[in-house]
Amino acid sequence: MKFIKKSYKLFILLYLFWILLSLNFKITNLLIGGIISLLVVFISFGVSFNNKGIKYKLPKAFILIKYSIILFIEIYKSSFAHIKRVLKCDCSPIIIKVKLETKDPFIITIISNSITLTPGTITVDTDGSELTVLCIEDDGENGESYARTIKERFEKIFL
Image 1 (cartoon, one colour):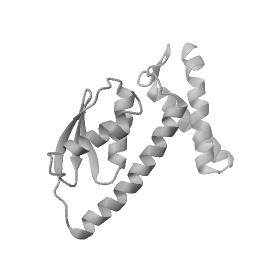
Image 2: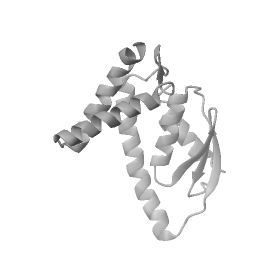
Image 3: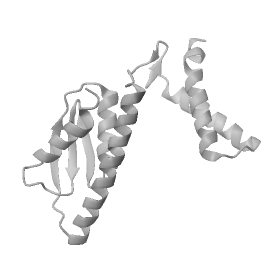
């Protein structure tokens, strides 16, 4: 019974997201969306929430909006820089380690996914709060400028 009380909000959110993405109001689509949303809620129990509620403290909405804007700008800037590198055939990949100050697994996940979304970089591994990142271009400083950029532009917002 407690499971249903704690998970119905997630079910409603997922179901509304399904409806907004599909914009198909046929009964079969609505049933499939409901079944899939219900399955996701059952599968994610214990991973992202338990009987006490959500396991992770979510950042405030203002911080997430600000972060999304900064991420969008970084993706935009990086895409043009990456296109320029590819056209010049100027790619020398380097793997760097970035030690984050935060210990929150939710924030670490957001930052590592943001790195992967940015063209020219991929988060290869995480070990606690240390990220292993593959960068397409060596900055000449053994990746120090990339590590500073990640910490200043991505992590600083959450601290």
